[in-house]
Image 1: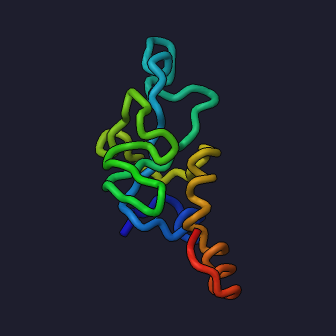
Image 2 (image 1 turned 60 degrees about the horizontal axis):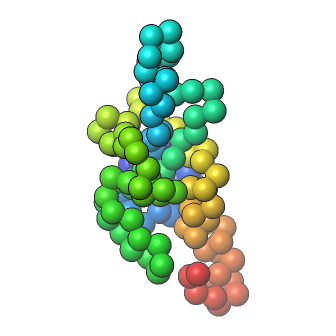
Length: 116
């Protein structure tokens, strides 16, 4: 369902839609004297939703960030994909991704509970 993002992401989460990682580009990271990548020292990697989905109250359109669907400028997946898979480091994305945690899934099945 998802492309390879990083071993730890695939082992830790069962994300039910196609995704990649992307950054929110910083214009200062594109100027002369910068790295030219749109990154800054504190840039984080976000989970970038590649196909629309709805799960409970959480809903995202295709080509949006999991943590902030209204964020601009967008760094679309075809431009934002990396040669090397990157681990998601955005705290808000990670908090939202907890619902797909393999550990939480095991805990719910052991207690007979359903999905949140």
